[in-house]
Image (tube, rainbow, N blue to C red; front, side, top):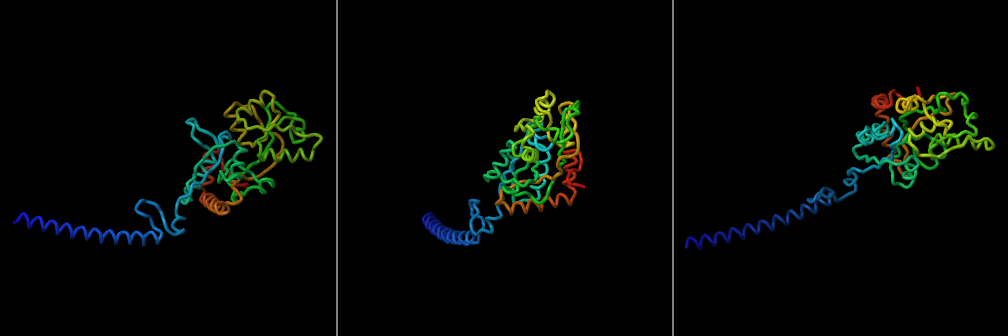
Length: 293
């Protein structure tokens, strides 16, 4: 009898437990539905509900940069992306937790194409302002480097001092670059005696070699870059004459990215005011080149 009673008691207890489980499950389903309606996270980790919560998700931002313009964007001895563009945008990324920056490398001209096609969110390759670019792209209002463009020649040459001396001479430029824009404007004003522009995406080392062997008569660069080229590839170059342009550099975006530009401007301003932007410039470039002062 005791065994039978024990069995009957066990069955009764099991039935009670099953009823309690069903009731609890019903409450759980109800609570889950209410939770989802409030826009919180479901049990499988998926965020559901209202748009405000969805807006808290981290958005991936594609940064397009290059690899052949040391110290601004290049690959280090381990093949990792390095340089001023990378360091500045890494600091910006830390100030914008709503974004995760992913760096991808391209030829200079292809960065512009990628931004226009909305495949790249931020173009980072020392972009300078000009009217043609401003028609097609957004630029950050905050700059992060200054540029003073100069004619650069092989050290033994004394026949070139200004743009007029480059008439008929071979000068390499990058497609879409500001140096190309300036020299194209010069050629438009001097159609009978133009500068022979050679559009190329070759490396800095190749350009130095072509200056030395006479393939090119000059390149357009800036003093600190020329100094770096002389350290890297031999003491072959010098800048000559007066600057042909003075400008600043900016990050470049698609015309639709007003909000992202505003946030980049805020982060760059914070880096400038805290002194961090100048620190990065000194660490990577060798001096504070963040203002026109």
